[in-house]
Length: 165
Figure (cartoon, rainbow, N blue to C red):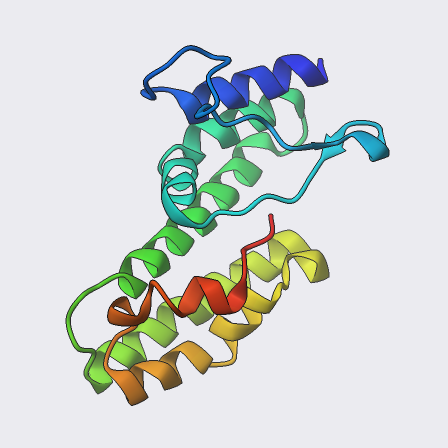
């Protein structure tokens, strides 16, 4: 059942990519062979992150097919929190200068997202990246630099190294 699940998730993520399923540009489900094939951490940066977030509703539907209790409620929570996270990423990539109202709205969105994320993931979901958002460091950078887009190649993801899932 695990390999079937991995195959379905791989198909969802790779849908629309050019090349056959064994091509090097196809994403493969990360597993930790040392831990009996358990899922490994993976990065959501760059195009892969955008792809996964854009298909997260379908992936959540697939994940919850194997659960029976409170499925619809849990699916809705995960879909909503990932929609909020995706919104944060879109805000971070905006190319205009952020004024005080934009910065306050951004932090409000982050706080709303983080409250829901923490309820769903507990301590395991509180990465350095989450800390960076939650504590207002990003908002502070907006105050200092106007936006992060112009620094995105050198800074934000490079500084945080990667988002762990």
